[in-house]
Length: 239
Length: 259
Image 1 (cartoon, chains in turn orange, blue):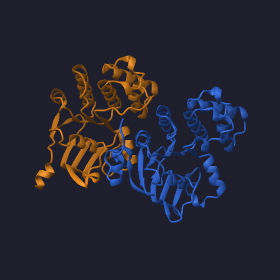
Image 2: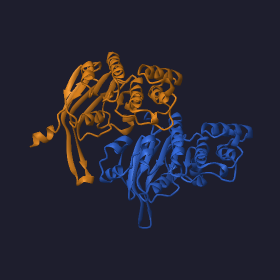
Image 3: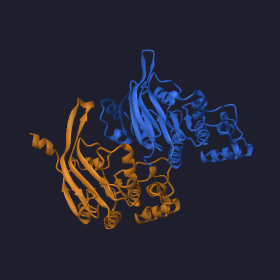
Image 4: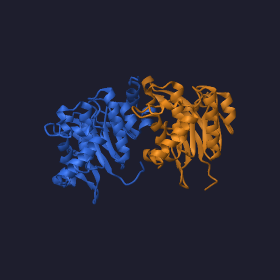
């Protein structure tokens, strides 16, 4: 079914209910609809606090939307899955085969070396251990992570070094849908440009990308389309 | 983990101690290779649920069905005691919080591992010894300590020996009750890393009880949050921890200290 987009979001809404604060309701997203097709990089635009990260987390099934649908084309399968209704087992599988998520922060796994952390997603897609490590090394080299760090667990790395490990881990598996939340936040100009190249390469191989970029230069360099995300649309309409 | 055939099916499981609720009306499915974590504060019924799932405690109502090798999904209540004990010794494993409850402390490490092999019919002494050696290596214990009793091991080594003892029969489901609670943080990291690696390499299903949400996040695909014997929230681990819906889960998550 080549006519179906990689990602289709319909009337998505998300509000948080904070029971520890007297049941306060915080509406964040309301009636958001868009498609992203392969080869596209959709940039989410809007001031901080508008709900861009919340939207991205919904797309990764890290947050559960309050309403709406999120249709994802599963890698290697003709069908689509609505991840709002998917079972945990289906989501675990989608994250292995179909969806990458790169956040600003690396959740380090104790005792595992940077090289193995990066290689893991490729191995889980069936890549042999040695081949996955080679790919991981190539990516870390492109991102200028000093080779003496590769065998060390990243817990003690600087923010920028951890971020590059995180990016390499997100890009090593060539999944069809990539979600990027400020991947260049703590990087210098050279590494920022390298991430721009990685994003363009991913688009060129056919990935659909949804991203948030603090840096206007990066935004302009990678965006094929933009989606404005406004704070409190729902609240404004209700008033 | 690829969702395949159902491994364990739990329906409306309840266990009471007199009038007191141990666990009440718990239902879930478990698939091969899935790591499920049961979290909640002490007294919430986590350990009771674990023991009832494993049929170490008999439920007052509800059912536990397991995909027995060669038999398919079977209601454990209908299983003769001898078959249940065989299941405990072969296709299931148990890692206890206190290694004294999971190991035989007076016999050697090799015998601790070999015992479960003999339970599945292995008789050749040399083969058993070789396999025991292999498993010590896998759990990062020096093979030279094969003939030492676990009393001479550190706490971390004892927990790793429990893993070796259980996994030697290639079980498909392992029950773990607070396996990291007695360990120093540095030792915990090594143990968790080993568990993470082995569960994925062996496509092992695990039901893990812990009060430590960081352990849950690191290991578990899915999370069940319990309070006063009941399940208050369940779902994908990171979704439950990052977007908790139930008031109790929100309180639990917001009470965690982050380093």
